Length: 71
Figure (tube, rainbow, N blue to C red):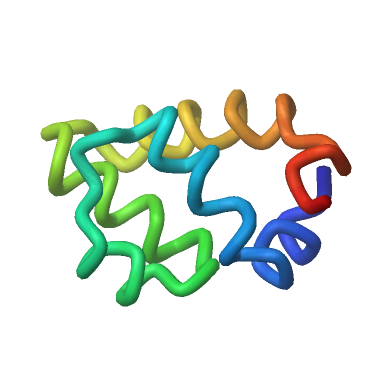
């Protein structure tokens, strides 16, 4: 799924993000606000990952995104 769709539906996508990355806080979600680069940084910070590893996780997660998330 295109990231623009996820960003535009960020409020609905947050639940799925929390399922995947449970260490992210509500404050993190306020900072991220649907922006992929911010999500990458927060995943790096909370999980101690490299940027490449965080990006890889986001790419895999993004592949699972579907329209059912936003209903």
